[in-house]
Length: 572
Image 1 (cartoon, rainbow, N blue to C red):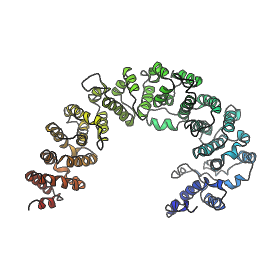
Image 2 (cartoon, rainbow, N blue to C red):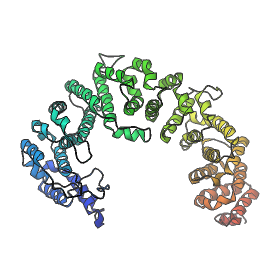
Image 3 (tube, one colour):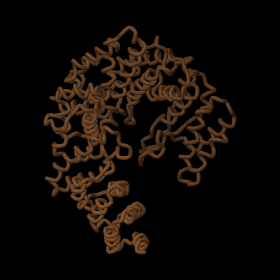
C-alpha cells in the first residue's frame, strides 16, 4: 500500500478525475487481493464504492442517455460464496431499469467477476460446472479473468478450463441467448477463448501442458466455424483485424500450430503443422469458402510462420494466398505481409517472381503504412543486392520511375531514418539513389507534390561523407523550394546540423549553400542558431572571411541578428 499510494496520488487533485483515480486504484489493488491483507481489502472496497463503473479505458465515459454499469457487490462478498452460489447469483441478478434510458445490464457485475477470477483463478477451475449455464456476458468475463491471470503468470487448471469451454460451445443454451443492449456477448466468449489459446501456446516457457493440444485444436476448429467476420473494408485493416473475433481466431490457430511444430520438430521436418489445421487453411484459400478479409490479412502477416510450418505449402499456394484477381483479398494479404516486421530474401524473390511487388507498385494501396512497408522491402532488397538500379525490370528502378510521390517520399524517409548511423551498405547506395531521384523529380519540379520530395532530399546530406559539385547542384535546386513545403522544420534542422559536420572539409561549398538559403525562411532558422554560429565560425577560422561576412549580412538584413556576435568577434 505504501508503494502504491504515491504513484496514484499525483492524479487525485482534480475533482473531475475522482472516479478515474478510484478506478485506477481499484484495478491495482485487485491484483493484490489474494494476499489476504486487510488493509488492501479495505482500500479496494473503499474505491469500489466510489467507482462502481468499469471500462477498459476509463477516459471513455458512457454516451449521453445511458446509465453507467453498477456493481451490486464486491469481491469480498463474492469470495464468501461457493461457485454454485456465485453462478446462481449471476443467473438471478437483475438491474433496475430507468424508463427511457438504456442500461448496460450486468456489466458492472461481470467486471467484478473478471477481477475476482484474475485474482484467484485456481479457485474457479476447481469447479467450473456451475458456470456452464450462466449468461454469455458472465462467461466472457469469466474467461477474461483467466486470460488476465495467465498474462500475470498465475497458474490454474488448464484441463478444467478447456473442458469447460468445449462443453459450453455446443450447448443450445449458449447459442440461443438473445441480447437487448446491442452487444453480442457470445462473440466475446469466442474471441476471448481464441486469445486464451494463443496466450497458452505462444510462449514455450509459459504454456499449458502439451497433452492438452488436441483439446485446444478441437476448440479452435469449432471457433473458426462460428466466429463472425466484421472487417468489410481495407481502411484501418491492421487494427480492425487485430480487434475482430475472426482475426483473433486465425491468429490463435497460427500460434497453436507453431507450438505443435516446436514440440514435434524431431518427428516432422517439411510439414510441421497439424494435419487438421493445414487442411482447414487449405480449403479456406478458396475465397468463396472463406470470404473474410481477416483470413487474407492473417495469411500475409504470418507468411514467415507458414513458411516455417510448411515451405512446400507456401510455394504451391502463393498465388492463392495472394489472389491477384481478387483485389480486396490480394490487398488484405499483401498488406499483412508488408506490415510484418523484417524482410526475408526468399519471400522477396518468390513474390517478385510471381509479380506481386510489381502489382503493389501499380495500384493505390489503402494504407500509408503499407506503402511505407512496400518501399522498405524494395529498398532493403536493393541494399542487399537483390536489385540493381540500372535494370529496368528491377523493383528499385520501377519504384523510382513509378511517378508516385508518396512512394518516392517513402524512399527518401527510408534513407533519412538511417542518417544518424548509416551502415556501409546504405552509404554506397545514397549517391546513385539521389542522382536517380533528382533526375526524375527535377523534370516535374513545378508540381507541388514533387517539390515536397525534392526538399525532403536535403536530409540526405548527412548520409554522405563529402559534398561535391554534383551534390551542390542538387542541394541548390532543392533548397530554393524549402519554404513552400508544409512541415519542413525537421528536414531543415537535420540539414543545418549536417552542414556543420561538412564545414571543416568543404567550407567554401557549405558557404555557397548558406548563400542560397531563401530569405523567407531565415526567421525559422533562429532555432538552429547554435549550429549556424558554429558553422560560420568554422568559415572564419578556415580563412573564408568574405563569404562568412556575406552570410552574417544576409541574416542581419532580414532582421535575424543572432550572427551579430560572431560577426563582431571576427572583425577585430
